[in-house]
Length: 421
Image (tube, rainbow, N blue to C red; front, side):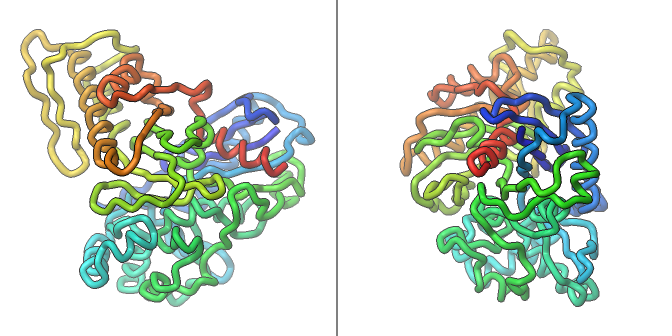
């Protein structure tokens, strides 16, 4: 069996998959998020590891595995979040998450000086307040004591690999989310490292996603009740793992991952650069394959907010068509139009799903002149809304496929481990 940890922003999940990548069991444990000030969103590296340990304990309690049956471990994780470590490999500060925006002004200065296309052509991303190079420059300006003690900059994937094996490593899909990685040259970008004042030896080793970077230590084996010495494969970024796990692996296939944020990821054969559209290219887990990613940043948050505040229970079968919802709560006020005394909470929720479906179509329309999107694979909590897949089909004109397992990121990581073992 393959033991998989999917370390997300708000939850860490532990799964068991068999040799056919069939899900046997899965559990979830919350990962703490620290909102210390407006635009400041942190996590503690120890919380990443504690969530792994706790989720493993819950999983073990639910299935009572024989430790000899576990043959490999794989990681799927959030991207972009990092923590500075000292010479003893202890955190010098809380981790800076991809939700953090403290370095927005620094990112603006970098884009003004070099041009945002300069970074986009290298990393697949235009620099923003969350971008680790900008965040590290914020450290250099504001936290000089931490900078002077830096031995290593660690990201979620390589930190967890380190805790499992004693070695720091990750794959290219995770590396490219750091914005220090050149997706064309497939290596850490020397110019961006120089701009950031960071040495390459401070960063983890990048290996192919199905490669074994290390083996489980004896200490961790006893802690998790698994065999020592079993391989820990590199794994990948959660959305890229989800693409593989859902079966969106052919040119023109598109993953729609409906979690806290909604992500769109289209498979391509070459890196596709379309500046100023909100689409970001990157390397895929499959050899000689690439992805093109976009997001509806508050997709899941909007539906959760509506369910909670409108007291929506169960799934919807119908709703009022005239209600209009403008769901961009990221930086603006939301708007609900055309309500009347006969309007119900279900009508508004229906309108919210419709608005999100139209937003997905708007994202896809931005790339339809460059590439053909043929099929859409839908996973995550949104896929369980009875009417939503049909709405997505209606507004995009694409066939929506619902994979057998909704835990696509975990399955993708398991497939990488199975390929190696």
